Amino acid sequence: MPAPYSGGCQCGAVRYVLTAEPARLVACHCRECQRQSGSAFGMSMLVKRDSLSVTGTTKRFTRIADSGNPNTGVFCPECGVRIYHIPAYAPDMFVLKPGTLDDTRWLRPEYFVWMKSAQGWVPVPDGVKPLQGHT
Image 1 (cartoon, rainbow, N blue to C red):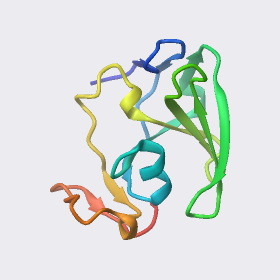
Image 2: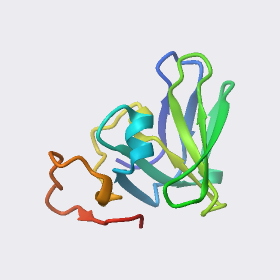
Image 3: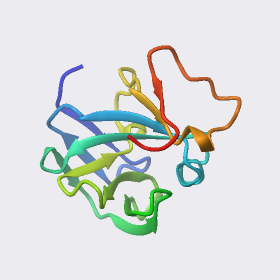
Image 4: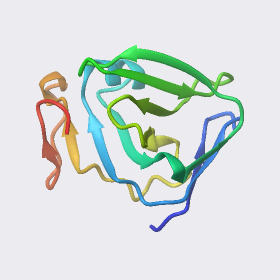
């Protein structure tokens, strides 16, 4: 499915358009992504900063990632849905939360990262490369 892609939060107060193809899609199994997603892993899509246009008011929260880098989450202050992260390690990129896309049918991660923290019952799909740390 070619760009542009649209998406937003659950309540509709924050919307976005992504005008370029993502650089990478991963499923992260670190403990912080498990906590943030409330699930076994979190999905992360690296996109160029200048390709993401966001409308609506957002709020930010910064934490230190398992890698030791600061990671700032940007979310809707009304419904709390995380829209993207601002990673310190890639100043020209955002890490979009792809579950917020309006159409998610085409999503397939290239990597499962931080597998050393993965839940034992989560299988690695065929064609997806597992990594103990990050890419």
